[in-house]
Length: 174
Picture 1 (tube, rainbow, N blue to C red):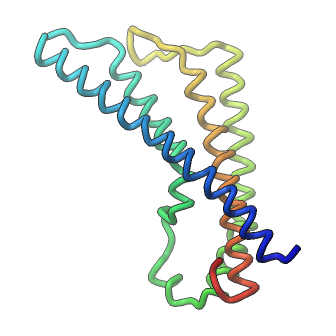
Picture 2 (picture 1 turned 90 degrees about the vertical axis):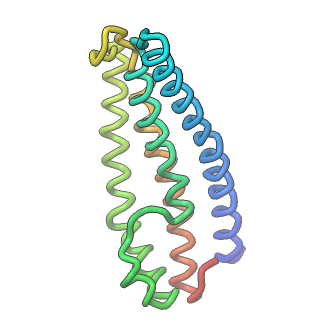
């Protein structure tokens, strides 16, 4: 099988998976908005603020932010020095991207995943609870989002690496 068809097949599957994960995770925003609106109405309309709103909003926002990172990479939304990068030919863009993915991105994902996994595992072992409010919700499920988000980001990184290798080899983006 040719490299082009392998790149197309693998990146299509990963990109489609990332797209649908991004779509599913985007619904967290609606839940977050509903929680905030409910709290505002209860606080100012009925003078009865909720005890859970602060915890829910920071956990949902963090979850949405982290789980959306792979979708952001898929859409090209992460920071890069475009004023230099856009001046390069597709071949040089592919060379730069693939080199940086191999040297920086994947080692960073490995270390972040390892640390995030240990962090979540300790939280599960302790059945950790939040201490920012009297509600004290369990936070170990939300700490599990860290290694999951990094795994999804690394998976999308594989797709981006294959695309950049294609650009480096063939002089055009797939």
